Amino acid sequence: MTTKTILVADDDAAIRTVLIQALGRAGYEVRAAGNAATLWRWVSDGDGDLVITDVVMPDENGLDLIPRIRKIRPDLKIIVMSAQNTLMTALKATERGAFEYLPKPFDLNVLLSIVKQALALSKSESERPSGVLGNDNQIAEESDNMPLIGRSPAMQEIYRTLARLMATNLSVLITGESGTGKELVARALHDYGKRRLSPFVAINMAAIPRDLIESELFGHEKGAFTGAVGRGSGRFEQAEGGTLFLDEIGDMPAEAQTRLLRVLQEGEYTTVGGRTPIKTNVRIIAATHHDLKLLIKQGLFREDLYFRLNVVPIRLPALRARTEDIAELAQHFLGQSMSEGLPRKIIDPQAMERLKSYRWPGNVRELENLVQRLCALYSQEVIGIDVIEAELADTSNITSESDNSADGLAGSVEQQLSTYFSAHGSNLPAAGLYDRVIREVERPLIILTLQATRGNQVKAADVLGLNRNTLRKKIRDLEIAVVKGAK
Image (cartoon, rainbow, N blue to C red; front, top):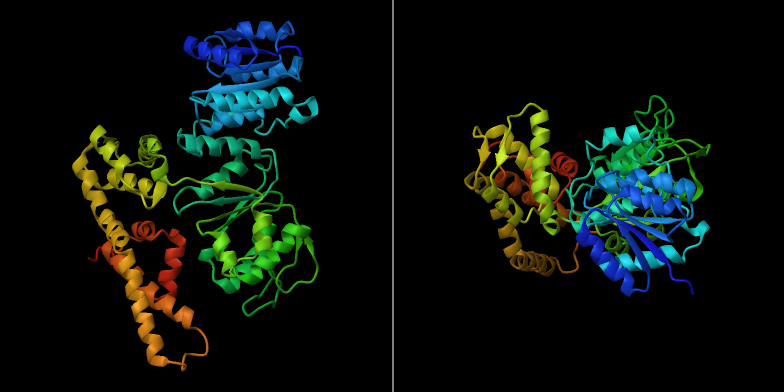
């Protein structure tokens, strides 16, 4: 068997040495260079069975080299490695035809596995669609306004997954805690995918009355229900040719779930009150902070719909699982606040360390809200540890007390219910006990949380782990009066 030759280009001598040794031990012949010009000469001469190249080199960007290599040697696989660990780097590498993108630092075992896969694939298997992002000028203009922030290993996996999905129409299910950025991921999939010139339409299931969701999604005909004085277009019609983002899909009523399943199976739907099927061409991206598998067991979510939506799952990490991204996120939000006319602020190193040690129950959204408050409410340019401690104190007390008393709360609820069942014996209400109990617990919980956050609904939503629109809807439905500044 002929020994495979791998061409390596990286201006860092230490990385070249490590790769030469690791690939050599694996049985490959390695030729390494510190610049793009040497790599290009080798490729032009027909040398090498695989290329591993860095992005930033002294004479040329490695990403710019990829299309030239593919033009003269389309069968030659290219692995891109980069310390510029952003979503845009992953997108550009994939769009220009790289076989794989690896953010630095990477596990050598992972690299060796990818090398083995690349060399084993035939031409037909290794071909990947390109041209997802359009022309290079468009990429350069958009790269200054990154849709997702963070260079942690957890976010690198998200970037690599998104890069692979850009050229597809596959349904995607995004899960994660409230405030982790699920809509940002959905927008990135649309804005950098092949449907980017068509509409992106979002709908939040938890923010719409349940009896109106079908009409909101599929539209309605005149006279379909009381108040339908004319035909109304639904979100599917508005998103035609583009992307429909179904946020908080776990709150979708059963009837709407059935209709949505038909759309995913047949590619068509009917309006409320209509009879003629309407063909649709829409990419579905759904998101939820609920455990859909648990909802399936409880009979609240259709299993067949789950499998239709969950073609590609993306699980977003909580902010506490990627604390190394907090400083970059905070700087990003400080810059955003300045662009909106708020004063310039600097967070000193000690204060930044405190931000990194905080648990962030509201995730990235909570951090964004905090930074906005710092810029709007404090006169000093440099934000110190005392300000951060004061801002985090209320929320920390609420969350820690709720965490510490969880077992006691459960015991108290069980005791109250036991007393209720004992008192009523077999004379229980005919129906509605579950909704009644949930309402009696939910209402005081929201009221007390709003009191603790002085009527700040954004902060209360973070503490409760609810979407802000969900909390507003619950406040309205439960007829809760919110008094800002109350204690």
